[in-house]
Amino acid sequence: MCGRFSLATPAEQVAEHFGLTEVPALSPRYNIAPSQPVAVVRRPDPGAVPILEFRRWGLVPSWAKDPGIGSRMINARVETAAEKPAFRAAFRRRRCLVPADGFFEWKPHPKRRRPHHVRLATGEPLGLAGLFESWESPEGESVGSCTLLTTAANPVLSALHDRMPIIVDPEHYRSWLDPELREPDAILSLTRSSIAERLVFHPVSFRVNNPRNDDSVCIEPTEQAELRVEDF
Image (cartoon, rainbow, N blue to C red; front, top):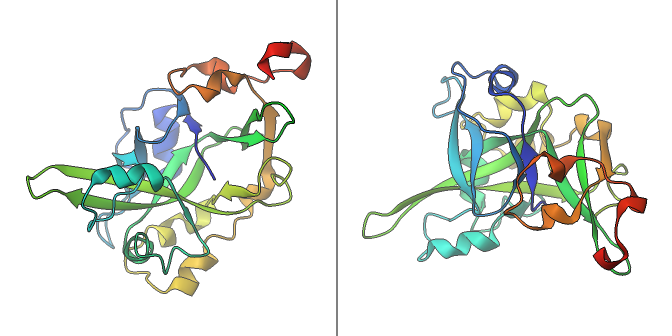
């Protein structure tokens, strides 16, 4: 599962990394949580250049009666996304990349799970694999939403959690965003990431547990000795 991530990379660097023709308006975010607006990169048409827009984190299928279902759809397991009714149409036609520069996982502990920030040692952006949908109520209310695809944790992250978000290798961005690529096996081949093997992680403050905390302290390394006994 992936329930929090960060994106504090300068907008100019995000635009260059994802091939955007316009520099987006991005504020540094250090503790992005479900139900909040998140930046997604998608290609509106097969031959179009990628665009960045904001969508609610928590996918709402077009057939849903209540948009509240999105709170249970923040992640989609890649192993079953091609068959699950909530995700199968988006898996084939509405894939996106969610820019991030790190994400959080919580390591089991006898008294309290310990949050860790996961990133590339180089600090470069990550393209998290996502799916997006558009929903409209009979009254005309519209919701643009997204979810993150997850897979089994690789050897680097298995000490933290048994699942991890899929990180798309940059050389696969174009294919991943191609709405004309609809063969499940071909899509799945793009989820086998080599860049994920270069991830590193460090423990961080329990401040990240509260989504109201959104500052650089959330991603700063914290030594075990700095924790109070009552934190556990």
